[in-house]
Image (cartoon, rainbow, N blue to C red; front, side):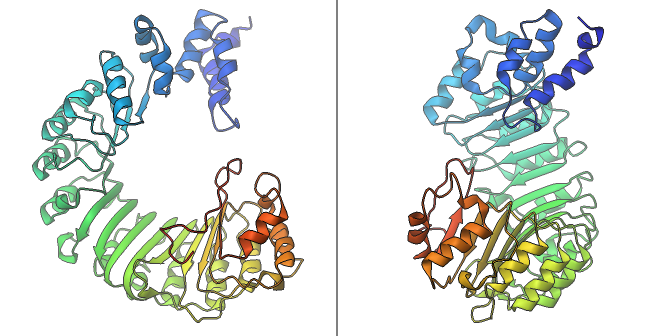
Length: 450
């Protein structure tokens, strides 16, 4: 055998390519075959195969053989119902996990501190708990055991976690922590004292909190390394956020008048994702346009009212101006003020200016697809489309226009034109998903306008 094929670095690169993003699907059959070639190939192939093993795969291995494969595991994700969790914890709780770096638990009442503590190891870097009756003793164990911890996500801990427990964890790991997210079921930890504690974590790059943050809680010139935020804030807080020049991902829910939100964010110039969910007020198009011009790398722009009283009084010209500044856009969701003349003409412009667009949602326009020119460019990458107030017009012609504009309607997406005729008689709301298993839902309870 060639000596190069005995080199661990070369073998790792070859085997990684079989399971990595360059493959349409991980080629585990080839990896399992490679593991039979020699002892060295076996070791290198198993490092890839068992890097993040599905829990059922581990359970299928003979009990006395599991540890051999657990030694390779770097990521574990526990999913399923309560009964499934209880069974898994019982069967895998006695194993050692020497290389484990990421641990994720789906919501379950079986996620007690005692049961999941068995998986807490010194090398753990990422911990994600999406629901379960954990308590402060568990947080203390994590804080004192995981000296390399840099990411913590905790949701819905069933009120078993206190502010004191969270503060202890943050203070113990303030030198390593880079991401802290507690969005759901933990509003009570969002206090001035907690914000102050978080501001002392100099390396914090991602922050998500579900409770309301008031303007006087955030110290000036704090969070110098912050890149990503998911926060519920008073509108005035945006003035302080504008001083964090490193922000790249901005997801805000605004309480109060949102009129000044984008005026306060004009100084930012590194944004890639912008989501603003607001309760009331009118966003000025010129302020939004300035932010977009200062941040040409924005890939996702979402402006949505939460209760229908907020609007973006944008005309078609305003939206075209936005589009012209954002060539990298792949997601666009805009709620425009009802009555403004936003028509089908904007669709052709978006297709031309944003060739990488995957998601398009425009509300409160008047879209007659039959009037779109046959020469209009198509959306080659679009995966989700929502156009409110669709004008039906000539149904059959609409079908042909849709098939031209959105190539994904062919093949697995729409088996016949009859499907589209049925669909187009309703308001248009199309989700492509995986394109192999597509559902068309025009009665989405989360989108009442559908």
